[in-house]
Figure 1: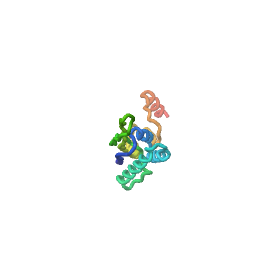
Figure 2: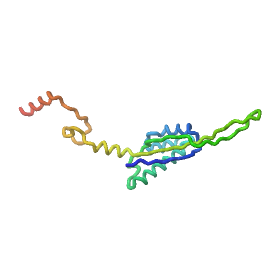
Figure 3: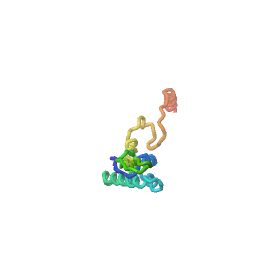
Figure 4: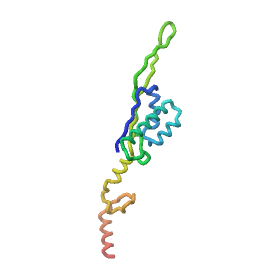
Length: 158
């Protein structure tokens, strides 16, 4: 399974305000993050939701034949960088001017699937698997040598 990325450049919001939204959804499942962004009252939630949908579509195009619902997508990485800054001037008293900086940001969002992680751990051979019952989730416990000898002697006498 390959990860997919979406990038939004020059979003008209300050990076500080957008990082609050990024922190809200970082590490969440993609579907839950979409719902959280729809219900959020933050200004940056709407562009972040569009970007998340774009990343999910990119993942779907990259992995043809797989459905998003079956893949259990989650937000692997999201970070917000400063974009270009528009500099404007406001009139101030005594003939002076105040500088006004209109900030923008760049958002990078990467989604990946949890399915690949589950497949690799399930397919890995477990040491001492012959002693464990197939399909049980009980931990494997090594028996001490003296205890093993007692059980073997009981089995021989019985």
